[in-house]
View 1 (cartoon, one colour):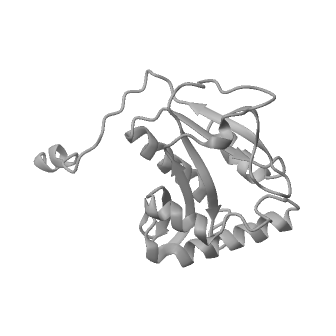
View 2 (tube, one colour):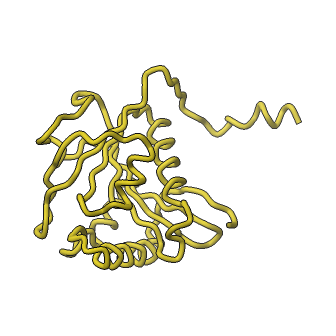
Length: 194
């Protein structure tokens, strides 16, 4: 792979993002999942994510390979959780939403890189608690979620007609980790020592 990095999605990326989302919808349908089969998420949702600067893309050279939204504000659908509870119900958290990998790059481990980068972005904003949800039939997403040590916390309901029940997961990064905000001069000590 060429240059591989995460960046905020720009307005001109919307068509590429929607191609990835449409292929993800087809992939879910092939795997008999009702998730994302009622029109959601659509172009309007991603346009809003982009305008709010919450959508991110993983870029390989000139190609957008994956997309996800990292929401730093409370998620309304997470206010009610059944069959369990959040571990840190009153602490700030970030929510990872609308994750999709391009079908041209599926199976190459990019979801791990995408998640790692999203967690880093959240940590740099002072967030230590992360939440995500997925459909019970979305085994691929459950696998990546569990590989990052997210713990299943219960069931939440989303606004989707076909099957609104979602498995809810949470990752709480311990207080023993200390992170600081990075400014544009963070590489300067290394450069000075060259």
